[in-house]
Image (cartoon, rainbow, N blue to C red; front, side, top):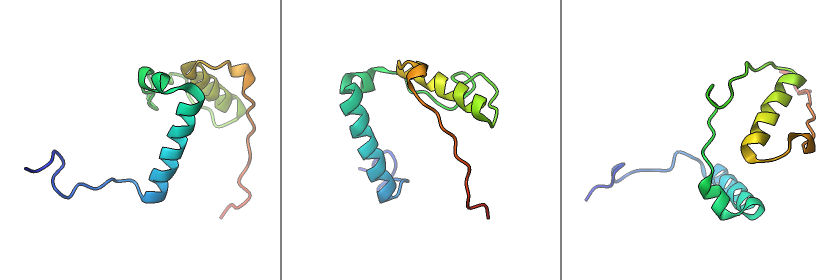
Length: 90
């Protein structure tokens, strides 16, 4: 019987990326617990989750970071934000 995605379904993520994703998930579960990972909603980069217009400066990044902190149940003031400029402009 053919699977839902066909017999030749392949993961669209390359092996190093998949390993990184798995490693990060393991870290998140260790930090916050498996139950929390299962019970929280998935936050997507959509206007319903991030209604503010994004400004490409420190204040805009801070607004975005604060919003992410809220979704994660973290106190935004405890997270330090530093911006760096790419020195390899080609």
